[in-house]
Every structure is written in structure tokens, then in C-alpha cells.
Image 1 (spheres, rainbow, N blue to C red):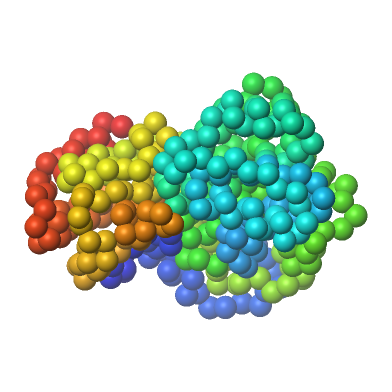
Image 2 (cartoon, rainbow, N blue to C red):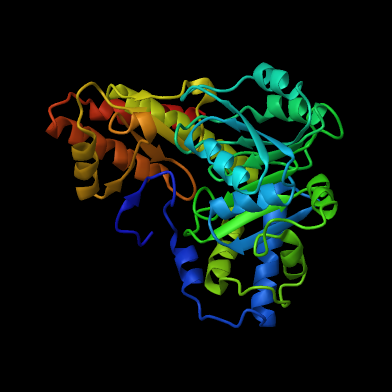
Length: 387
């Protein structure tokens, strides 16, 4: 990689040279047949990743835009939405839905913990929910939702299952034709952004709608959006030479290359790699006296929130790491100053994390904390190669 730093925040993630090269390609007109072919290919690859028999929308914008598209095209003003939240980004659905006059009710987990299916089941028993949002991995806590348990509960209640895959897509299974105990129990919507496990720079919001979600939009006379109305984008996604709003041509070049790399690695292999990276990185950091916020049973393959040893200065620690070329993120809300967040997803390599563990250990030593660097690296390698 031509990157000068190891960008180990929970997104954006490191960008490989092939994607940089695609991004810097000569710009074409957005209705040029050559561009249309590339755009169409990227959409088809994304459909393969989600294994959907519905439609995929790739739009200029962020993951938040994708969240908005998922909600307004399935839930009408006045209808009920249940938000299942495992942290800050799950909570973001609350104000987003309220802006559009949607009735929102929320189940919020204690940070670092997972909401049980029984809790969701009891809430849905109240009735009347059009849809349920579940954040697959919350970027604030590093907690993953139990999709295997939650899909059947939501679908049995007759609600649409909307999965926020911003910090999971291309690293964790999100198969939209997989059935969870019944032919009708499937994921209806998955959304993501380009900058996380797909490994492309920020700039694209991506939403996949399954047949039931598309039918929900069809049943709505209109939606509370224009740019975010999937009906305006569907002709473009099917035939990219058509025009609704100008797509980000060079970002589509980069996204196409990113999706080619994802599919070339193979989804099952990619999922195993992320699972191994997550377990190994948390284990290595634990050797330094650091503690993952989430227990391993609910911890995400894609990022971790790591609590500092007592007394460690957050700003100083992260600044020292940055001066050595390792960039990690601060924690959010009540964990600000008490923890940091590290991403381990996308196109980042084993070698990068070995180097990162070494630099973390050296930084701890400089700050007066004991750190057995060899033990941490050996722990990482042992788990990574045995997973």
C-alpha cells in the first residue's frame, strides 16, 4: 500500500493501491456507456455479496444517507418503528425517524452488552410495528447483534427486518435469501457505506432492498424525500446510462474495484479472516492490561472498543501512536477518555496489526506502563493462525 499511516480507526479503513488507481482514473461522463458498464458491474457484484433477489442502490452520500433511504422507503409517517440499539449509532435511527413523523420506540442495551431475543419478542408482542432496525455492529461499542436469533423474532411479528451493515458488510454474512427457520423469515433491507469493510474511501451510501421491502415502497403513494426516494433511482440502477442525479463517477470506479477484490477473496474466506483478526487483536491487547468493552461472545469481527489501564491518558496515548503512524479513534459518550476504538477490517493486513501491537507496546512503555511486546504479538499470531 502507498499509505503513509496505518489508519486503524473504525472507518475509513486502509485503501489498497488497486483502489487508489481506480479512483484516479480519467473521469468519464456519467452517461458514457463505458462508465455505465462499470457502474452496472459494481451493482451486480454488490447483489452477489448480499445474495439478494431484490435491488441494490449505490448513491453519493454517507452511511447516514443509506439509513434514511432504508427508513423512509419502508415506513410511512405515523407508522411504528422499533429501534434495537447496541450503542451510539443504533440510537441515531431515533432522531432520523422522528424527523419524518414516524413513531419510534427503542430498546437500548447497556453499552458492551447485547439485547436478547426475549426482550425484542416481548416488545414486539405489543403489536403494530411496521419495521425493526438492528445495527449489525455498533461502531461505538464493538458489539454485534445476534442476527440468527433476531430475524425469526422480528419476522414472526410481521415486521420488516432492516439491518444496518455499515460496520459489517463485506466482513460478516448478510445473506438476504437465507431463511431463518421459515421460508418467509429473511432480511429485508441491508445498508452500508463504502469506507468500512469494503475498503473504499468515504463517499457512497449503499442500500439493498429485498422483495418485501420493495413491495412496502410500492404500497406508499409517496415518501418524505426526493433524492432519497428509491423510485427515482431504480431506473438508473437498472440502466446506468439513464439520468436522475449525477453519480460520483470516480467513486464508482473505486467501488467497482473494491467489490471485485471482495468477491475475488471469496466471502467465506473473508468472513473467517475478519473473525480471526478481531479475536486475535483483542487477545493481543489484553496482554497489555487493556480490556475489551464487549465480552468475546458478543464482540464484533470488525472493530473493538478497548478500555485503558487505570490512569492512562487517552489524548497523550493516541497522540503518541499517531506520531508513530498508527491512527486509532477515541471512544464516545460516557467512555470518552476511558477507552479507544480500533478497526480491524477491510483490506488491512496481518502484518499491519503485528506492527500496530508493537507500537502500542512501545508507547505504553514510554508512558510508564509494563508491556510484554513479544507476548502480545505471539498471542495475536497464535489465535489468528488457529482460527
